[in-house]
Length: 222
Image 1 (cartoon, rainbow, N blue to C red):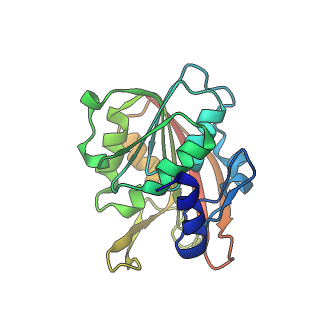
Image 2: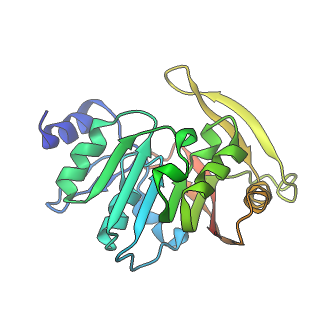
C-alpha cells in the first residue's frame, strides 16, 4: 500500500501513538504530541556520527527527531511489525531502520549504540529490572530512560512499583507496573550504571485530554 494512503487510512479509521508532521505539511493524528514535551527529555542537540537504538518507538516520533539531529545510524525495535512506522519513515525522509524484535532477545551480539532511548516500555513488561539489564548490554555510552511514574506522595519516597495488570483494548496486558522515580533510580544503580541523573518530572496530556501521565526522565551513563 502507498505510504501516503497508509497515513490517510490511519487518520480516518485507525490510531497512531504519536502525532507526526511531515516535511510537506501532512499531519498524522496521534494520541500524543511529543513536540510539546520534547525539552523535558534533554536529548543532545547534535547527534552527528552517533548510533542510536530506540526501544519501543511507537509511531516513530523520537527516532525521526534523532534523524533531524544528524544521527548516522538509527535502529528502532518493536515487538510487532508496524506498517505505519515504515510509511512514516518514507514520508519523513528519515534514515531509521525499524526492526521487529523483542527487547529480551537483544544482547551484545546485536551491537552497541552510543545512545539507547527507551520511553514507556519497561512498565509494559513483566520484569522491569531484566529489561533495564538488557538495555545496558547494548549501551556504549548513554541511556535515556523515560516512564510514567507514581505521583502519589504516600509512595514517592519509597523504591516501589505498584502492580497494575491493566488490560489493553485487545484483552492483553497493557501496563504491568507503575514505579516510583526512586524505584527506577535503584534499578539503574543495581544494573551498575556509573552515573545516573534525574532529568525531569512532568505531566503529559493526550491530545483528546482523556489520558494524563506523570512522567520521569533519567539519563544513565555506562
